[in-house]
Length: 269
Image (cartoon, rainbow, N blue to C red; front, side, top):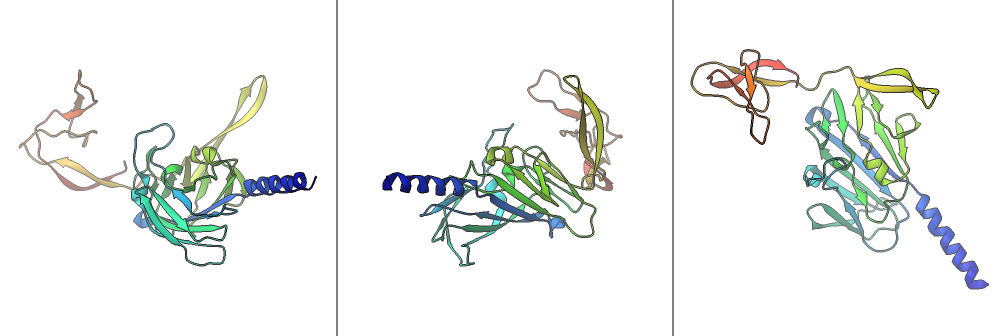
């Protein structure tokens, strides 16, 4: 009877620990330089070293991209603020030792690519692909996750995500897999709402979209007749394009021989 009681206590303690949330915070104070500052709290850890990983691929596109290459200025402390020893067993993970059951990790993330694979951060918006943004600890994959987006002051930013809203700019996910499969767009978003028929019952449906254009970039403009130009997209209205058929890739080319130089003209991409 005594051992059965101890076993029940042990299982109860493990269950309580498994319900403790992994908590993230992300701030964009240096968004103009494509940086975010991120902190993560991993509580109720078992004894021994804990391995913190940065994902190497993301849902929907499983090619290796090694998102750890955009992480720097990383540090780790325990629950009392004591600095912990951090080592790199491989290029995409960090091994933290000497903790007291809690590890707080803080790092800077560089993001200058807003697509379905990477994270893009500018002074106008932040488009977050979660595997390219947030670290995770091995062994805590089934714990609930909570993330707080610290939005810049003076900007009319809000959060568009499938994560569950909790309070203010704090959102949650039931586990790591759901969290990692929840791309999030932060910016001056509007919400368009309408009603759909869901098995005979009206159901509200909404779709967020941003009101600001992406960061502009210089365009290439033809200036002479010296060589053929080619690119993955048309250069300008002055350079008519066509598509090379019968090749493995879609490749528009200029139909006019030109020399391409950087122009002062700016257009969003």
